[in-house]
Length: 253
Ligand SMILES: Nc1ncnc2c1ncn2[C@@H]1O[C@H](COP(=O)(O)OP(=O)(O)OP(=O)(O)O)[C@@H](O)[C@H]1O
Image (cartoon, rainbow, N blue to C red; front, side, top):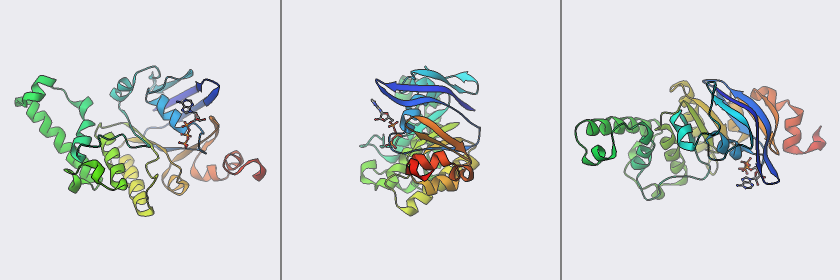
C-alpha cells in the first residue's frame, strides 16, 4: 500500500533520513521505532507532505505522493495524529472531531452557513458518524467539554478522534502513549488494534513504549541516525544485533 523508496531528508548538514526504503502492507499495524533523534517524526513529516524530501519517493497504491502538499496527501486518505497535541484548545471535543470531517464535506460554505436542505442533512450525517467515533474511543460523554479542561490522556483520544474522523485508509500515529499511564496505554493499544481489525485501516505507529510496540505490531522498522537498521516481525527484531547496538551501544555485539 505504502512504498518508501530511497528516501533522504537533509536539514543543512543533518541527514534526518538517510536513504531509507520500506513497504507497508494494507491492513498492517507497522511501527517505526528508534532512539531520540533517529528520524521518526521527520519520516511522518515527509509522508504527510509537511516537509519535502531531499531525494527519494513515496508511493501510495503505486501513485507517487511525495511532492504533494499536506491537503493533497490528506485527500488520498492519509491522516495523522501529532506527538504534541494539535487540537483547537478552546473548542469542544465534538467540534475538534468535526474539524476532521472537513475534507469529506461536499456542500459549499454558503449552504453550510445557511444550514438548509442538503447541507443540513449532510451535517447531520457527519455528526452521527463523529458521534460513533467518540463512542468507539469512549469519550462520547465528554462531547461538549472544552478539550483543555480534560485530562491529558483524554486529550490524546480526542486527537485520535480527529484523525479517525477523516476516515483514513492509512493512519499515522505519533507517540500516542507518551505521557500516559499503563491503563491509558493499554486502552490506546486496544483502540489501534480495533482500527485495523474492525475499520480495515492500515496504521503506522511511532512509539517509544517498546512493550506496546512488541505487543501489537505486525512488523517493526528500526531507525538510528536516520538509517534503517532493521525491519521485521517483533520476534525478528528482538534478535537483531544491529537493533540491539542502536539501542544499547556497540559494545553489546
Ligand atoms: N526542522 C529541523 N531543522 C533542523 N534539524 C531538524 C529539524 N527537525 C528535526 N531535525 C533533526 O533531525 C534529526 C531527526 O529528528 P526527528 O525529530 O525526526 O527524530 P525522532 O526520531 O522523531 O526523535 P524523538 O524520538 O526525540 O521524537 C535530529 O537530529 C533533529 O535534531
